[in-house]
Length: 291
Ligand code: GLN
Image (cartoon, rainbow, N blue to C red; front, top):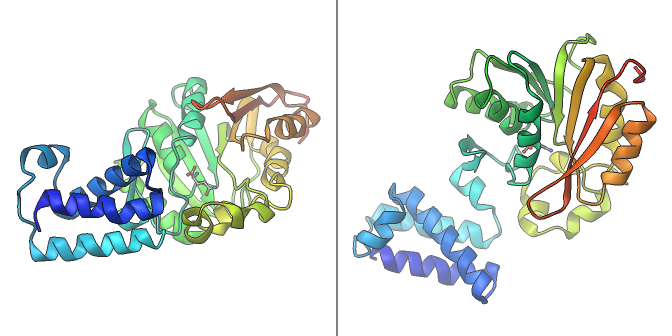
């Protein structure tokens, strides 16, 4: 099979999951190309410049295997074992949530708040994508990521090595703050906690509902469980004037704002993502914030 034929075959197979329309073709084309490039070690220019390149038998076998897995709704990021986020490449496995573009808004708002040398705590760190991006794009900051899943933290450690951030990031396994000493030591706490209502998970697209870790999605009956727990405990770990920044679901701004205001956080603000949806909430710890 030649390169271009493999690409077209990928489109044909992947349109069965993405749909027959223009949008489906575009999505299928992008995924087909990415899978093919990862198998052959090629780039976009190869499709344009060397479409007649003959695939090795092994390349063809692996590519068809990838298409088969993708047809069964396994996300491309898990098949490839990586996902780009904030212009950086992160290793992923089914033990971690796949980093989302939406979450880049959280990182961007957090970067605005970071001062040189700040100490960061990232809860529900998963792949470590939030913490490691913050460290990569800032000066002299250090941070700790926590996660309930030891398997997730193995991926976070791998990403730390790959991004050359070993001296600046560390990870501890535990439920939110459970394995940390209750000391006010952080200037910034970030979290992209699980926030899907339990009853809504099975209605999500199969890639998410069947393949991504449920523990990274499930925010309890009303989806707000982790916001309550974080809002309650975070003041014990934040310096006065410290910032708490969390990703939220697009219909959760009002509830999460109320949870934070009830605990006397101040300057509580909500930011939208590029799609115009509420996505990030920011709050400061004041002297009256409940501890
Ligand atoms: N912090 C990781 C991310 O934003 C994981 C989040 C989670 O597991 N809920 O992708």
